[in-house]
Image (cartoon, rainbow, N blue to C red; front, top):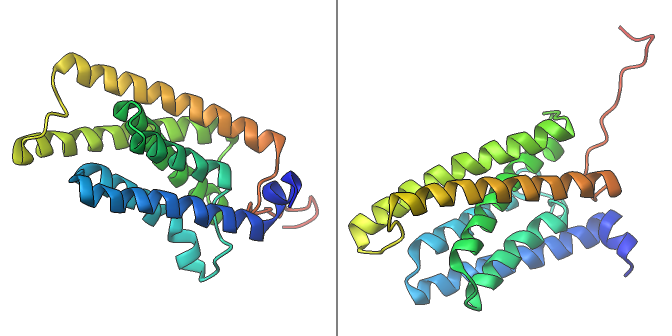
Length: 195
């Protein structure tokens, strides 16, 4: 298997994508044993959202480009080995937003320019971070966790996750310009003579 196969091969992309989703799902299972309810829910949400194209089309090869899913796997592996859990949280929230935007572009009739797709991914990242913050607030209140320690930290979280969203969006824009990933939809253009 060559790099060309991984980038352009739909079956290779799907196999690698499902493997990466399995890593994320295993992280959610690990969350059961560590009582990390919020993290487990977020990891499961990524798995469900990333699986939607395959479930909707009933085709296991209808999968996002594997580099998008690799970012989610990197985030859960980083958290599992004890690296900064906040950084892993920023990364997985931004990845979930990117997954949503890429699925809209690749698997639906929605057409987004590359720059708008990046901006939309950043806005979606900010919205998901706001929902994540609300979930953390209620977790602190109901389960006695200590996710939100200060107003300043909350504001820093919003700024950092926005920057991570920009970086991730920019990297994906570069990836799309450099490669044509497996699974992308080639849109037919109207010829000048058609009505």
